[in-house]
Length: 224
Image (cartoon, rainbow, N blue to C red; front, side):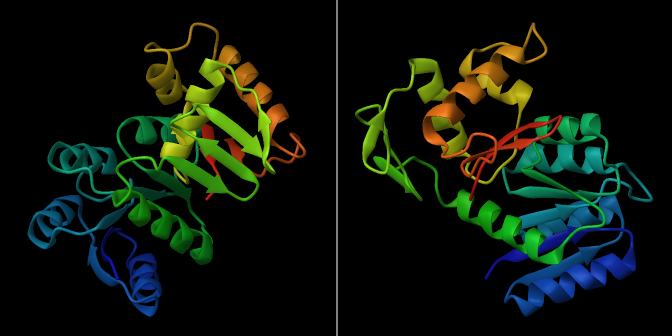
């Protein structure tokens, strides 16, 4: 059971989210205003925050920045702002995930479970197993159905980063900075080439990936 803070000015959506969370054995608190949400956050110390960007008093991005100054608590943006540039900005500013309204409640609850689970996984296991994929981080080896596949050092680093943040959308710029230490000079074309190469090696059908999912215009996510 998790304690979830909902910062949402639409009372109908706020009530719906609260009921859905409570039905799934979570505690839920609803704030209509951004400042009110900050006060709730400081007082209640929630395990996760659901944050709308279009708040009546201050912009949700400001709320995101205020929370991030105090805590690394998982924050999922729930907003009608669906432009890729806005999603990228929110994710690069510290949001863990971004759900566009209208949304599917089952998918949102799944994303909440992933975000909460990630908070208790601070280090990678020695060996990671997911479906037919096995990664031995200590030996830098990757296997598909127990058959070893060769990844270059950069490909292995990219795969490790995605697994470390399993279920979370990683923006192109975040990945570039984490792996290469700088942002893209070629509109992320090199990153796309590396991702395509990894998929050819680990996916049964690279055109219908089951491990590395493309978030169009934003980045990539390792399936959870």
